[in-house]
Length: 561
Image (tube, rainbow, N blue to C red; front, side, top):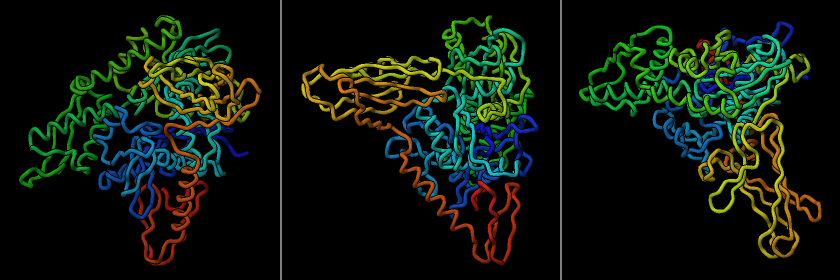
């Protein structure tokens, strides 16, 4: 069996790690970088570039360079945060036929699962290069607050990438494992994992005892992360340019791309120092054709004032998670920080205020999730046995009742795996089928929750109302993946059950994407005479006047970098 790697598929950066005879370690690419920007550029000739080079290309090819795809995976295009993202993204976010959020690149619609697949494929290639052997299996992490559709979409991305995702693991749980929380102290300890990354926020309360991690409660915001700080700052600077020069930078993709990079770099600098300069020469042209050279001094105080509301959104999920776990802040013995945005001083101040103690910062927040995924991969592969993970459901799961009611079948924070049964009876004479709509969320108004699908049990036997009973069984496995079956009770036989998903890719669409990619790679394996072959992510370019046979790295299709 091939080695199992751990992949942190991040909003801003991704990372891959492995457990081998050298211990748990992060694997670096050929450029020496231990994390890879989650950016993907599509060229007009179908060449795909991933990582740092794709990010650099965003300056000149902004409309064909996708970032933040994790924020779109499993999401609807009309979601409030998706709409906010669409307003500043230089690439187009469009609606798929089922209402999912896709991107339109070079005139063609592309699912965020396919974008994520390119990143996963890159992680796999880095691992194969570092280990010198083929790799096909991985543990992939997701935010604890991801719902069923987002988890299924992550699995689909793995399938497209040719990666067998043997386990979907919650990021905070992976981080706690990497921190080695199970090796500190004796007896039962209560810890909190505060995970604020580029695009999502998670808070998990868990107990650790005798190598067993038991998640007691989880909460968060799947639409809150470091990119929101970047975007808020970017919007402020766009307004300043418009007020001074009457030029709308949102209509100039190259300027927006440069501004976005400058805002992110400034935020990183301000996490260490109180002020930092912004220099953006020739950002755009004013109404008279003169160059706009944007320069100013930016302060941490100014950014904090602009993002006060984002900071306040961190509090409610933490308080709710502690309440769900039945704990007070004084019961929490340690708070672990995960995600690059936890470097921001104001975020650390919020953590200290909420939990009454300084958080632990003993691990690299950008790498700790991948390390935890690799450690858990080792446990699944039988290479380690010093820890066991017990997770919970992140949301209520239930059914629609009446016009707009929501009846909870599986309450949030139920220990995984979990199963629940409900009985239903026919309401009409000789009723032929029963239709049950499944939802996920916390609102009593079903329309404010996320529709997961619809279960239809047909071929029911004839009879008066109430004479035919149907048993619905909901099961959530250790990866928070939901499965549903239905059975007609009178005969004891299971009838046909159809789950019609409200979104996501169908198996036919996944196969079509894989087939299309194979055809594209096949056509690019042999390049015609006189072409320019682009080499590694380092940016080097090699030109030749003879036929080039593109090198075949295991797991890395020709033409993809």
